[in-house]
Amino acid sequence: MVLWPITGDNAKVKNAHPTKVALVNTVVELLEDRRADEITSEQVLELSSISKGSMYHHFVDFPALIDTARVIRYAGWVDRSIELLTKVVTSAKTKEEFFLGLSEVVKVTQSPTLRASRFERARILGLADGNAKLLHDLGEEQKRLTDSYSDLIREAQERGYFRSDLDPATVAVLIQAYTLGRIVDDVTTDQMDPEKWNTLIREIVEKGFGA
Image (tube, rainbow, N blue to C red; front, side, top):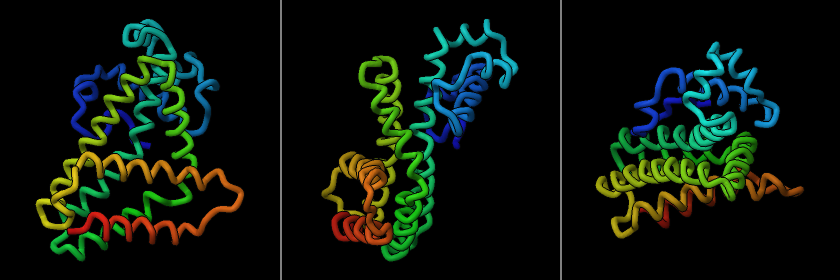
């Protein structure tokens, strides 16, 4: 799991106090193998070696710390996907190389092994309904992620790999939507062939987005 500071030009991350970063990273790690309601403030303080006074100096309450870690975890896999796509866009010398690299990214990001990650992200999105602070922070992080994707799509357009008439932000949202939407098959009792799904996504991207 990507810990805080995460990839990206996020002012809140760059300017965060080391104590705050340590607290968040501790919760991010704890959430790797347990539910939020199984984590106590005592566990976090013991593992991080930070005092209760310092924790409440940086967070209004313990749930606020949990929510901050949730936002980081929500963005963690997307950031890794962005890193993979960045390597493809910057290293490809031809359109063929670009789409070959993109096929590998699809294979990684759509993997059935990421089922738990998709479920966690869906849970976090659900928790944001009725939680104004979490919704706000999640919204800011989501904007950063979409902007990062948009920049890469724009660069692919400039290199002649993607159609120039497509809106980068719209494509960015679609890419994230079909990746998270893979959860629809995660819950069914009769799952599809993963390779057929990957083939379909590759064809949609290459034929629908390709220049």
